[in-house]
Structure formats: structure tokens, C-alpha cells
Image (cartoon, rainbow, N blue to C red; front, side, top):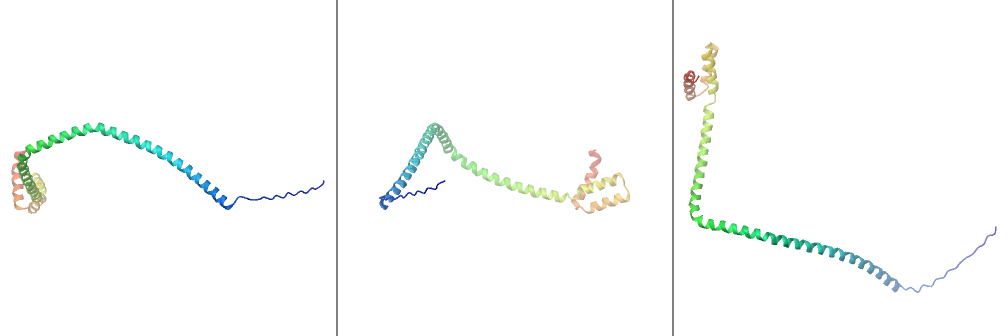
Length: 173
């Protein structure tokens, strides 16, 4: 086997100047930017079309709702006219209503105080009634002592009530 050697010598002359390289790079950059602008303009065109359709739909909706607004305005006008006619008579009525509400709230306050007094006064009355009933049914010394202790724990007015209620118990049965 024989070995053969070859060599190739290539010499290149570059007449491509630096100015030309800069111009080619600028052209490539400009081309890329123009392609980007073209895509953006397409997007803007689509968005403009969508916005135009939305504006048209909004205008159509406003035209349809215009009749409803006019009808509502007429009703408000009737209400305003009614208030203008009835206004002079409603003012004194409103004044009386305010005084009535103030009086009602005062009476409700007094009723609450009365209910609190009733609850406080009736504390122990139920126990006294029960022990007196037990003593009446089974008059042992223990039951009579419990009845006396229960009566001692309540006030004189409550004692009078329990005594009178015990007197009425046979009639209520």
C-alpha cells in the first residue's frame, strides 16, 4: 500500500469591508424589527375589530335600554309630583309619628323595668308555694318547718300573695 500526500492551499481575498459588514448587520436587524411590527399590526387590527364590535353591541344595548330609562324617569316624575302635592300634609304627620315613636320607646323602657321588678319580686314564690302545698298535704313537723323557712326568705308582699293563693287553691281545682 502506497501513501499519497496531497495538500491544498487556499487563499482568499476579502473585499468585504467593515462598513459593508456593519450595513449588513443593520439590514438584518431592520428586517427582524419590521417582521415584529407586522405581527403587532395584525394583533392591533384584530383588537380594533373586537373593540368595534363591542362598542356596536354596547350602543345597541343602550338604545334598547333607553325606553326603559324613559319609562322609569316618568315614574320618578309621578312620584315627585305626588310628594310635592302631599308634602305639606306629610310634614306634620311625620312630626306626630316621631313623637309617637319616642313615646312608644319610653313606654317600652318602663315595661322592661316593670318586668325586671316582677322577676325580682317573684324570686322564691314558687318554692314557697310548693313547700306550703307539701305542708298542707302532709303536715309533718319537717314540712311545716320547710314552709316556714320558705316564707321567711320572701318579702311581705310575696308572703301575702302566697297566703292568698293557698286560700284560692281549693277554688281553682
